[in-house]
Image (cartoon, rainbow, N blue to C red; front, side, top):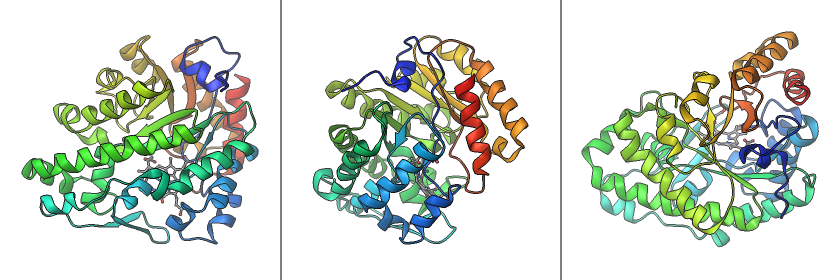
Length: 342
Ligand code: CP3
């Protein structure tokens, strides 16, 4: 039970020799090695195959040299285990097929037993731990109820979130039952990951930033807090919370009990720091598109990002959202090297 990982020390604001770095979606299509494995599987099938999961999870650690491994999976895996059909067609986002009209449709969704229904997650984490260098922690993750409900009710990705919002405002009772069931599912899913060996947890409520502040509190914050406090009551494990477009709700996010907030690029890191003070650590927040620039540009942007936070501990370098599929690998390596040398 090594708690001496650089990343965990940074989250706990202990003294560190350099800034830790990892990348959201680091196991992904910008790596040719990932694409080679991926061509053998349908996406959801790959998410259930421990050998493939471990192979692509290790890739960015060995090739890019990031300071943590994150288990390759998807936030929609537990949603499928609840009984929602999830498919990924080539070069398209996810497609979810489960119509919710009345209470019965939500009652029919199951709360999976992860040790049975998602055993491949535990098996993968145990195998991944064996392959990860001993000085690198393993990050487990999940989506949060608002973002997961949005995929179910929108049937996939969305621009304006009209379906989930009209559902939420018109059929609140059904909506809240859905949120409760997802919350229970996610708590079990995260606890299973921790019991299998995850050292850090990141919770993605990617789309909670599209809610008005009062709605954020009622429909997203409340469940984030419930998940975090349930986990913290059992395990002393660092938890990172990510929301895209969170500049306006940072102080509220602190109240979830998360140890670190993962900030998107639209918020100035110095501003975020001034809002949250000493209460949490920060992660982020370079615009993923800066990686389209040349190497000199990438170096400068990395340094600019870090300078916004300053020299203290309590900071993890990352992008402001997931890495994009067509980013040149050389630039990703330059980014990681620049952070390590800073
Ligand atoms: O970070 C990692 O390397 C771990 C793996 C991981 C994936 N998805 C693999 C993946 C993680 C942490 C996620 C989280 C996820 N998935 C989120 C939250 C974070 C975020 O980026 O906002 C969301 C919203 C999803 C849902 C999802 N999965 C979408 C919308 C898509 C399609 C988007 C796209 O870029 O095409 C996915 C597919 C997906 N999940 C891929 C990967 C590597 C690409 C699919 C492929 O290989 O064809």
